Length: 210
Length: 205
Image 1: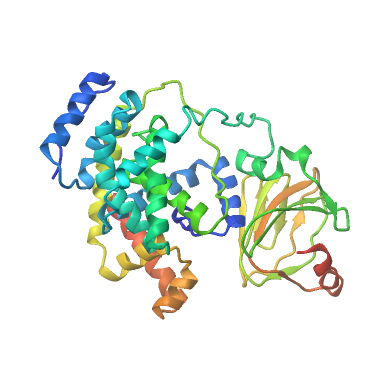
Image 2: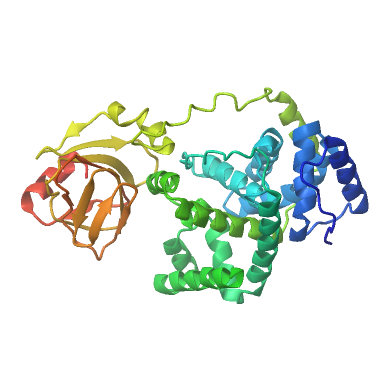
């Protein structure tokens, strides 16, 4: 389902809480990629009001996805369960760091889960780039957030439109924790083919994003 | 892209993070690759958690101290040579590097990382050539100070040279200040000359 309610810039907490309540009442089942607005409001409710209902809603949507992601990366069920809970707890503690003009909530969750995966499964550090110094405006730009939203939707469509084989390889590269050489070994395809298919897929995505 | 997916070796990740700290174009590319990851999370299958998982997570949250992100290390100042991801490995800026001489005025400092690859800082006096060498795997070399030139071109602060099995090169530090580089490899280099080949095991390149 898709949400058509747009949050105004600088929504006051009460309004946000009310909005979250409406969203959660209207659907207890599933959200799609187009529901980023609802997720952004939930993250804001956690940040401003420590809203446990909003967190529970985010948890219902993202936790099973994070767990699937971790298990595809080679974690066993127990470890994946444990790490998923830690990833979700990180969403709570870092809610104030989320910037809706720079990433969708799904992307944010992906980066947290990826970093946890590197910590837990590969037991190594992940060097992070220096943070960008923030500009004069403290509030994220609403126009940026809107264009990001449109781009995320376009991206999801573009991925869905990829030829089956290219989509599989992109997924393997992201979720399987495999290098291109390992994908070559696993699929029996020559390394050159893998690299060119991934490049082609990324090229198509870039083209679709125009 | 592998850095965005989190499948890169630690040494290469460090070069990537250091470069992205200085290159807005690559930061934008990283963010778009991460967006692909996010979109894949949206449409990936789901594996349900155990019944008490939400309560367990709330218990985790309650057990966590308030305001955990207080000791966010002081920002690296504008005039530091190393961006913050590199400073974390060195324990500070250029003046904190523990150099070891490896001959001809060249100095190196190997940084501690996990995994099969190696990452090191190199300091090459202006005008000095590194021994002619090829590669058994991938070598990423990023310039932090000064510049070097080889068969492939001219590399200055922020630039990264990507060398693989096909490239055989003799990097020469451009005359003037010392050239400081961050170099990550996943396999030992292949030197042409006999002397560097003999010295190789001792200096760990």
